[in-house]
Image (cartoon, rainbow, N blue to C red; front, side, top):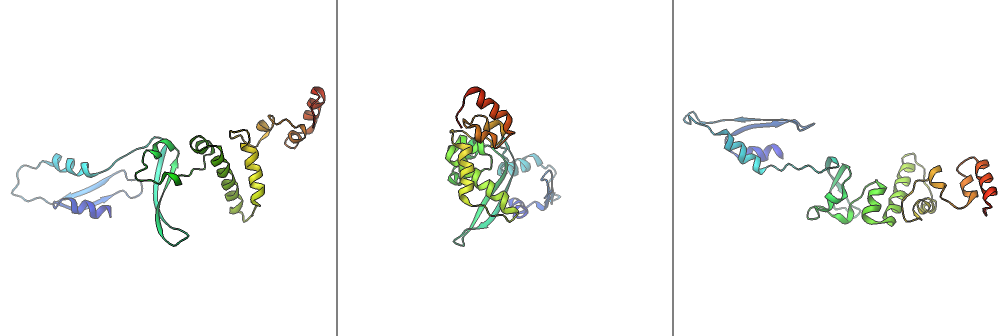
Length: 192
């Protein structure tokens, strides 16, 4: 499609090829009549460059277009990207369906759409990790884990550092050696 567009852009262009892997270079063969003594190649390149779109968005390293089939059988074009910059993507709402933007970056989704969306991202990502191994996890368990990670209104990891903020010594003991938490609970007179 790209080659045909370039070939049809000017009758002097006879051949066009480009680096299909990294898109770092292109070659253009021109056929010009002998009667022209002076050739202004700059104007040809300027005209062609004005029709080219080159855009870089900070935070996105690579974008790929693919075609998928929806549940209803319709084909749609999907933009997959590497990197994250939700604010820049939303600026392109005229081209992108911003209601369907998704990222596995929980913090970015929480900051842009709220903690409830972050909760759903956590559930989906955990489910997808287990699905790779053919393990089906009850959605109630996933919901419980995601709820625990987001119940304070911010996303917190499910690890030993985040569990310290929990008020229950029994729950803290499930993540670490119990001696330290029993000792601390006894000394401070905490209820279990």
